[in-house]
Image (tube, rainbow, N blue to C red; front, side):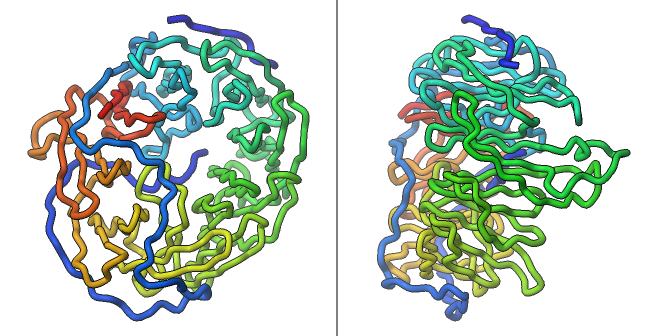
Length: 487
């Protein structure tokens, strides 16, 4: 293993599901059909038509095998009991349940990141076939911040901060060779940045232009304290857009996220949302307001949920940025499984679940949920099956046969991956719900019955294990360890 350390060239996406502890019981049920919904975007389509899914399938029909387990100690990261592995794109998040743990698949190397409250972040390159640490990267000057999740022109872009606060803060972009962890270029950003994203072969950075954002004793920040900028890999500015935002006073905590679509960029900052064209940076009209957030980037468009005096509503923007649908009394539903970027699912005002085309705004009813929009926490369309998590219950609904009884699984651990007709879940407890250790299990998509379970041992994390995806494999991340599973 080689550690590279060179001088630098000079908040997170919403979590859909909180992982918990165990699978409890399985039974069949029949759900009564509610009255037809009356959203602004009227449901259309042929009853019984099979929905589509954009989930790339893996193959785990039977009990998998643990190929290898890597621990952060193997990369020399041992200090602190809270050291854990994280998604390199979410290194700055310390919010429990919101920081991801999925490694970046860079072909011949997986890239993960380790950090703790008293341990500066470090990137680790792993050999996918063995879990052997190939390299580590920690900048000699400054502190590693968030990376992009995509390799661009053979380099992984990452942010490096000088550790300063307010007017003293500076951020640079470094370009890392994913095979070696060695810096291969980079450039200084004009303002401190909090996140980095990829569109085409360029980079999009969310920057903070006003140091008063963090000065509790200073003046109120300016009317445009944030700037979204697009840059080439050489650091040339393509465009910059100042975002008008009122913080409500200096020193207020900030929540920021960016959704990058094929032709649009959506930005959320503490309930204010912005929509921009990714080619020009032009700000487009958008419905903002209290508690608004970009819920998904699907089908070439963007979907947002917001609340107003009339209650919640979902707005759908096509790939051109035009508003194509407004559904009153509805909320966007986060996807149930990893990598689900298919059509948006919306919980409607009549306990219905709508499939919404993010390009045209066309919507049609797929099924119902007994608790309504307030209790529906996740959903996905997998083949002809509609799966929803409603108040701790996983429901499976065959959209081809409305009269067929649905199956249900009472659970407190939501499935996280769809693999060849099997839903995978991870539990922080053994199958008996009492002994130490944990398990990974598979639920059959057709009937919700357990296809297989696999025990996990020596779980070390305090927040429970999570099931993630890396390339063509699934991995279980628990605290400072990652275990690769193969069929």
